[in-house]
Image 1 (cartoon, rainbow, N blue to C red):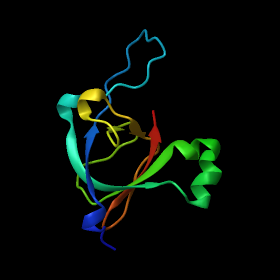
Image 2 (cartoon, rainbow, N blue to C red; image 1 turned 90 degrees about the vertical axis):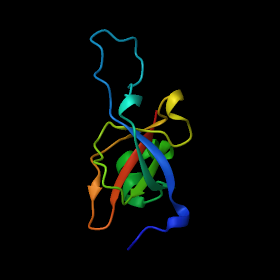
Image 3 (cartoon, rainbow, N blue to C red; image 1 turned 45 degrees about the horizontal axis):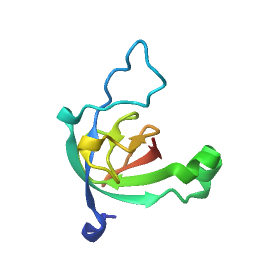
Length: 110
């Protein structure tokens, strides 16, 4: 099943930067210089299975569906509601699932 072109958005995807040895409880940081633009569909995470797995955290999570060839990995940052200059507002929360026609990833709000 192909993704609908009308529902796709361009989303900047960034690899994570290494964590500093001494950090002041800051969130993860991402490298804007290695950002890749992917086209994908972002939906609320509404599945019963995910709600059971993530519990209360499911309210802060989204589902990403993309047919882009860019490799997705757990921990990568994604700018859904912000610009890349402002930093990522979501990160890939679990290892993405690769299907024949698309990739599926669960995103968590930072």
